[in-house]
Picture 1 (cartoon, rainbow, N blue to C red):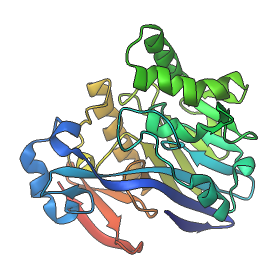
Picture 2: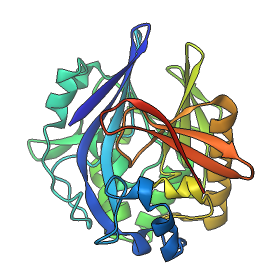
Picture 3: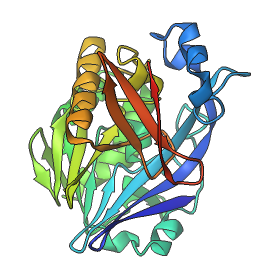
Picture 4: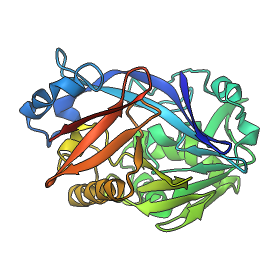
Length: 305
């Protein structure tokens, strides 16, 4: 599944969706959230971001594709095919991702840059593909940019055998092949790549980065896993269970939301469907959020905490 949004001047952004459905129990995934919080915002969350009958969050696994006249850029690379993972929504999936990319005029050999927000399994999967029994870089002409702090942490955890799915498997099948192939570069706060600026947003992982893209007076923020659900805009203190440093994650979320308000930016989250993204505003001390409608047309409707 894919959606394209032209930005003008030969620039377009597309989301390519591997999976979109109710997945994780909301109380399990957002342990900081009071059970009544989702109910109080049921009007905007129901069935689009949360299914109240099962209390599950509607989750999207996807790849962001940004095409400019000079570059073909991926922001994260999703889950990937044929990879062993603990999550049933990621394990050994098989989608025609590369065919979808070709349909968008972005075959693997034309990708020039791969920018990672972090190195969790559902953000590095298409770094590689299985060819003749070997994990081979999918984008042979691209440079893969990775946060050094995440790479160092994953290496250390793998050495200490701290979880085969998150560390050993991910490093072996999705990170090592591009590093060993000389395709990887490490990136940090303030670095600019292909017109995108890296913004440090640590907490979910120690090296987590968001990416800011400015074009024709508009600002677009690729926020990675700073937020998994709109409820984290309406209540920024709510972390996901995967945030490794709770206080840093909250600080980074508040910082990114303030940045979005200051710049009137469009926020492109990693796990929510919609190529028109989110619009963030302030209402007193709280944040509000606006969405595109189900048919992909922006709306002025806002929801406040």
